[in-house]
Amino acid sequence: MRHIKTHNTEDKKYWVEKYGLKHELRFIEIIKSLGDYDLKINPEKTEDPTSIDYIWNGQLADLKTQTTPFFTSARYGIDAQYAVTFNRNDYERYLEYEKRLQKPVQIFFWIDWQQLTWNDKSINYLFGIYHGSLRRIKKMVLDGAPEHAYLRRKNDIKGNAKSSFILDIRNFNMIYQKRKQQEVEKEKRVSISL
View (tube, one colour):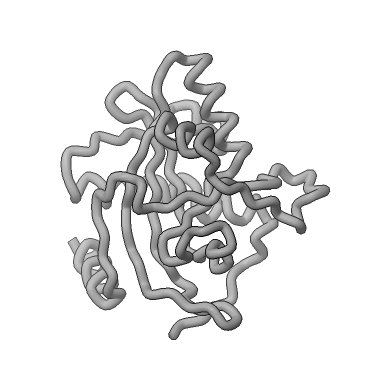
């Protein structure tokens, strides 16, 4: 079992830089290799790096990358193997985008579990790309998707989400999924060498 130390989850600047434009461009390469996904970087990102990531078929789309499982999600009734978090502040911001621009928002989840154990809990490796509309997420929220409040962010002033909805990735469209890390690492090496 692999256990790695992760960077401070409250350091928003670090995470925006780590998973910023370079990462979003890499995702475009990967998703295009999997099918007819014509993603383009949203031009608004040149002015605001926190703007929604992509334009896709005339719609807006955003990428949610998750490398650390929500190990305690079982208390919300969702297996940690498949639990993803979706920040309430993003949810509200995307609803506003849809209303203001009259365009649907699509969400891509890119999962690559890097930490497989925490305390007495463990999960299996999972790499996957999934897709769903904000409309689908809104239905999940209205149907009672659990919401987790972050205790360390109660008084946050750095722009971190104070809470997230806990969603089951199996309720989204699977684009690609692998459960063996060796296969994913091999594919990464091949794509880098091309």
